[in-house]
Image (cartoon, rainbow, N blue to C red; front, top):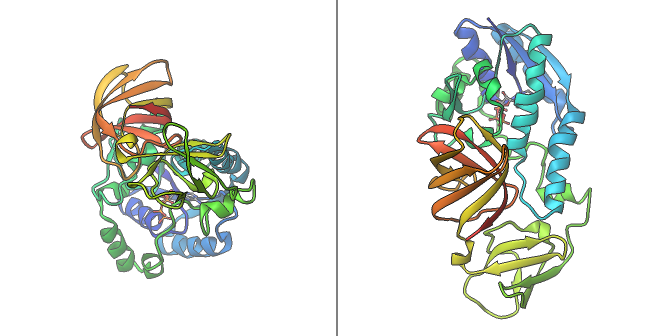
Length: 340
Ligand SMILES: Nc1ncnc2c1ncn2[C@@H]1O[C@H](COP(=O)(O)OP(=O)(O)OP(=O)(O)O)[C@@H](O)[C@H]1O
């Protein structure tokens, strides 16, 4: 069986090609040029060596236009609107398991594979064995139809095991490289990216829940919900947290820790791997947030309300709220609002 493996020049996709080859698949590599924030020449030199060592053909596809529209522009627009985007989740839906799937036919492949840390039984995704590397949260939005066609060989390994394998098979260069960054198109920090599009350094006012001006900030795009630092208060207060961002008036709303807790979270763009319209689950509102018991009610085909049994902290517009049943991923959606 021919499998199209997304290769990046990193250790995870390199070992993915090896594991699939060992398992008897005919491997075809595909490197997508997504943006100019990485050194394509360097990556392709590594992929060339890898392909010789493992023994597979590979291809290169330019998807810059699509990546710019679906991921990069979305990222900038989200900050402009005062929300906190999740470009990796968007990229997985639109690019890595969106456009990528169109290339299966072009290269005569039956399956796709990537080096994501997640498990897949063809019907559902499950958290990876290595909980510190698990990427299921970022995959909530991929279409249910693609699951039977996708392989994630790394889901059953820890990152350390993958590095060991890389060393053992002569991929030391891959095993020892530094971990890739959180957001692949950001070299320094996201503010530098935003500066190409608007001026994020626009001081504004910090107000309390009642709208009283109690301090100043550097520009709303520097902040996310739950943030405690980086703004100035006129008087000393008990710790104050960002509880709201108003992009239109360039205002930060701050409050006490208790004000951060939300029991009703409103979602759009909901993607489900199950058919139920109302269901119990555990949901998390950020990648590193705890999973909390909740009831999800679908309101329309793509909108839902999530009712948490205890308040969820750090609910930010633009982030993903992702549903689980144990290790099983049930789906998720984009946060569009929340209330206590
Ligand atoms: N430019 C690309 N072209 C094709 N597939 C890619 C590309 N970048 C990433 N992928 C695929 O998506 C997977 C997850 O990417 P991510 O950036 O989250 O992971 P990573 O842990 O840095 O992986 P790697 O070590 O392979 O770079 C990669 O393992 C690879 O299979």
